[in-house]
Amino acid sequence: MMKFGIVSDSSCDLAQEYTEKEKVTIVPFYVSFDGENYYREGKEIPVTEFYRKMEAQTGCYPKTSMPSVQDYRDAFLPYVMQGCPVLCICLTKTFSGSMQAALNAKQELAEEYPDAVIEVMDSQLVTVLQGMLVKEAVKLRNQGRSLEEAMEALAPIRSTGHIFFTTKDLKYLEHGGRIGKAASIAGSVLNIKPLLQYYDGELASPEICRGRKKSLQKMIEMFFSYIEKHQIRLEEYHLATGVGLPVAEYETFKQQLREGLQKRGYHVTEWEEIQIGATIGVHTGPYPMGVGFLKRCQ
Image (tube, rainbow, N blue to C red; front, side, top):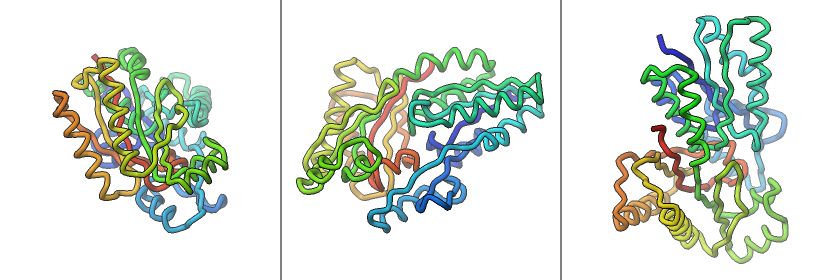
């Protein structure tokens, strides 16, 4: 019997094949296109279908809703009934109330089952980085580590996560309040593409670049500039690329990144690829693309 169970919300963007194989319970976010009908991400609406609907409906700005307390209760209860401790890794609390819903569910279950052991961890991360943290938790669990040992090992690596990403236009960022309307209009007229970073638990102010091709090249330059400046040893990190709606230019982006790694002498043994989910996609539109990394546990 495993020493603890692992739960995460769907913001971790892990493939269903992986979560089923490794027995990770995923609590879905909800997605709505009309503000009335909500669908569970990855279960009632596949992520690719989400992006296709967004692409097809010009001027449509879908929204997400966090999992409910009941959703978390339903995820925790099977473990509690088996007497198995639970580690729940949630989307950073600065972006969502998902973690608070998990804490509320923990409190309710503690009143009914005083012996229940449920630990809720703020990943301090988003999308692929959160998924990487979950994968490290799985590795520790599979090594036979206790819940306490796993939490101690996971806590310090959360701050090592960094994402560089871009998207095709500014209108979704403007609709979400990340930039002003004037900047969005100017960007559309001038073919300006945003370049963004996520690190230290926050989304950095966007930089801009003219044209999609140049924005992808600039993102790669920013990635290499950062890892060289901070002397990042990539063999000690998870490395992943991600895309929203699958597009041909993603293959070009990966090839340029691969050539850059080889040219600089970086030896990457594992390169993960993910589909960026709806919790980020509602802010980026159908065409987010990026690269991220997170340090592995020692």
